[in-house]
Length: 251
Image (tube, rainbow, N blue to C red):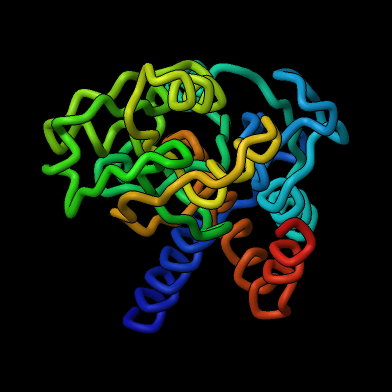
């Protein structure tokens, strides 16, 4: 009787374990969204819409290889604006968004795979502008441009600042040079890359106020098995040096 009970308990535990790590359906597919956020993800033709092979960048290459190794199907599209992509991923099962900055405020909203890459948050001033600030509190006296619903903008708002948000981060370059904003809150090296594309160099780093990591954010209803497979694949890629190789290819 005791042996039978033990066998039943063992069988129950095995069934529970199998259920927890059940295989995903053969036709399962993740809808991956991204935006122009060079050099991490960007359209090959620099437009605001692209699909699959029309998208490249550091994170794009890493995510493609990650899904391939994990054996998970996906379709990938680059769209605009970020605010819409962010809300779609929040609301739609089996949607994913990259490159998404991981923050404590965002942590409970998604399931996460990463980090894909590391970045810094900076305040930039126009060439020749000698603004000097020691903290974000000091910077509050200036007009700060940011990218709507981007992690940098969200952080500024959480600190009591009121950034002038744009739908495209590139808009802030023209605003900065035209005197419509005093400082540009953006991600490094993204801001400098965007400025270079617009023929602008010599921007002054006024303040570096955060280090951040970029992740793949998945809708909360994404099966844990999917998250685990992707994270395992990414960890293997990083150990092999694949991730560092992609960074070196673009920077």
